[in-house]
Image 1 (cartoon, rainbow, N blue to C red):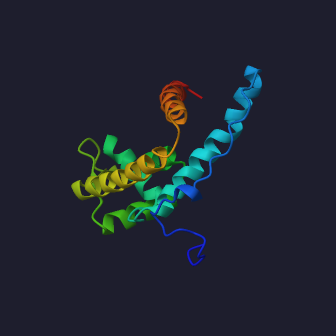
Image 2: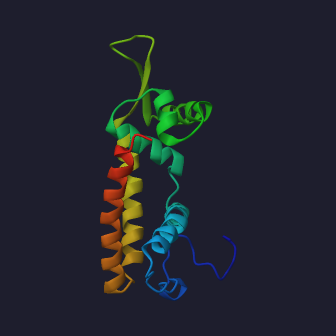
Length: 174
């Protein structure tokens, strides 16, 4: 809660306020370990993302930042953005409208098919996205900096494993 005197101001880190749960005993059973990861990974990653967004400047919502990040790869149709972002097409249309009014994206007709409208990120959108990313990297650095060397090494290994997992999920035709 914002007005709660026990809650530090957003963006302020107090070592005493940071509590990390005790690491569970190593799972001797691989299946149990896989189940634990499947049960907790997305929830915890999502929670961390929300906490960082709450502590940041809030110049972009999570949905806006995600859409801009997707568009940095290449221009896309609204229908493709809806599928990529796992949002309903009308929601993506509203999101794109809002970003276009702010000068962060453009809509253009496809050179190959004039009926097709492509959405692309503008230079201003790239700058805004990079500013938000830099802010979150700084917040993460501050929080990771209070962890033990073993926890930092574990997080480094986890990020590398996540990269491999992302590659595998993207290659999976399901």
